[in-house]
Every structure is written in C-alpha cells, then in structure tokens.
Length: 391
Image (tube, rainbow, N blue to C red):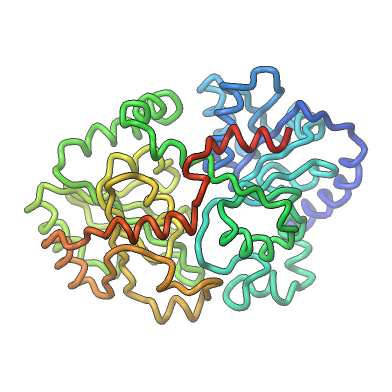
C-alpha cells in the first residue's frame, strides 16, 4: 500500500509543474502534519500583518486543520480539492524540514523556503558521515531515494543565523551560500517578549492546557526543564538514567519543579509521577513556556542556543553518554568550544549541582556563544525580514 501511494505521488508530480503560481499566495506546513515550529510563528505573523496576501496552513492531518481553524486561521486539508488547489497555486512554500511538510507531489515550481528547526553543531543531511541516516545521505540507496524524494529536493532558500552556521547548513542542504537567509528564527521572538505578552500569545494561540501549565508552575520557587536531544538508536530512552524519585525529593526541598519534555520522536511509555515532576506531552509547544522557567537541563540539543536568548536563565549540560553519543552522531564543529553551561557527566553530580545551585554561568561566556550562533539576528524582527527578502 505504501509503495502504491508513492507510485501515485510520482505520477502526479510532473503535473504540478503545469499550474501557474502566484507570488501573493503563500502556503505553510510542518513535519508530521502538525502546527509547530518556525513555520507556525511565521504563519501567524503573516496572517496578522499581511492581510493582502493569500496565505494558509496545509496539512495531511485533519485534527491539525480543525485546531488551526478553531483559532480563526485559514487552514485546509491538503488532500481535499481546495487544499490541493491552494498548494498548487502558492508560489512560496514555508516549511520546517522538507516539501513533504506540505506534500512533495504538489511542489513542482514552488519556491521552497526551508525555515529548518534548530541551529547547532551536529552534522545533518548531506554532512552526515555515519549513523542511522547514512543509508540515505551517504550511500543514497535507491530505496532511500524512492521513499524520501523530499530529502533530495534542494530548498530554494534556507533560513540560517550567522556565517558560522551558514557554512554548515549550506553544505548540508547543498545550496549556495547566497541562498541562505541569515535572519534568525521566527519562533525565538516570543522568548524575549515580556511575560505578559507571552501569556497573551499563549492564551490566543495555544491549547488551554499550556496556559494552565504556566499558571501552575508559578507556585514554585524554581522551575527546571529537562530537554534532551533525539538519539537515533534509542527511541525509547528518555529518563531511564535518572533516579526520578531521588530527584523529586531534592526538588521538593527547594520548592522546585522539573518539567520533563521528551523529543517529539521519543517514545515514553511510563515515568515516575510526583507533584514536582511534570511530564509534558511531546506535542506541546514549549516556546511559550520557556520564559517561565529558570534552568534548562539538556545535552547536545540545539535548544541550548535558543534558551540562551532569554535573559537571566541558566543551563546544565547533562552529558551522561558523551563517548557513546559522539560515536553515533558526529559533530560538524567541536562540541567543547561551542557550548556554555555547567557540565556534569553523572546523575550524582547532577543532583549535587541542583542541591547547591552551582550552575550560574559567566555573562561573557554567554555573550560569546550568542554572538557566534545568533549574531546580528538577535536585534532583528525575523518574520518581517523573511517576508522582505522573499518579496
């Protein structure tokens, strides 16, 4: 059945080049058919500020369409006649990963603007040299090409942040440097807004559960958030290396809470429950919540660089499997030279650091990393600049 669907897709694809596309029509989509990440924030911005443009959210997921429409925003099921028509007539497609965020077989002659979903150090796409995706990007087997044509379709524009990041991403996506837009990420704008502005945004565009979560964590003296990266060979690994019962006791003594946020690809069947441990749904948009936290606990995740944009926040790098991880997923740039935060390699040390509050970083160290990864984009209105460059 899957193979038949792809054959049909390949038969449709050539006809998508026949439709005239209008530069005043914009289509937006995200991975797994969700409503998320940079394309979500850019879409909301365009709807609010460019009423003369015909823009819409497109998805293969009917529930996503229902939710976006409930917000009063234009959205269409891409498999419907009107959804397909919107996709075929839009000149600009804004996606977070690939043309498949909307639908590959309808992308002929569309200008793909890949907003991507994270700066960082790890090799990705055609920079990969080993690991689970080597079959696709190194060996480029027929099977991988057949089932993942979107990965081999170069974006017309790629969103980056600084020359330091552009060098890495230009080679990863095989696009010229002059097609990389060093304009920062739309999703990060919310991180530097006042808490009242963030609350208003969350109340308008997020589920009530997210707004309630923000209210709930305000009762605690300190809010930690644990956000580890995705591990290609460990889709079920999340907090097994932590004694959550012990951690809960430490947090309770400080009137603190820990938000546990799995990567969207991670499968979490069950986890220790306590009043000061909150397991967040994988699909929650964490960006509206981060300004209300105090300390990020992460590892090799690109969330580090986004979190540093929020003033007066601290970071703990919990690197319990460093040697194993770098064998599985190598880095484009040296890890040690391009991160900031308190580093711990064992759970015992993690507990000790939390107990003692020994995680405050030097502001100069933060400034160096921010300059390297975000540079001038810190002062930019990313959404406005993206639209200006494209127009």
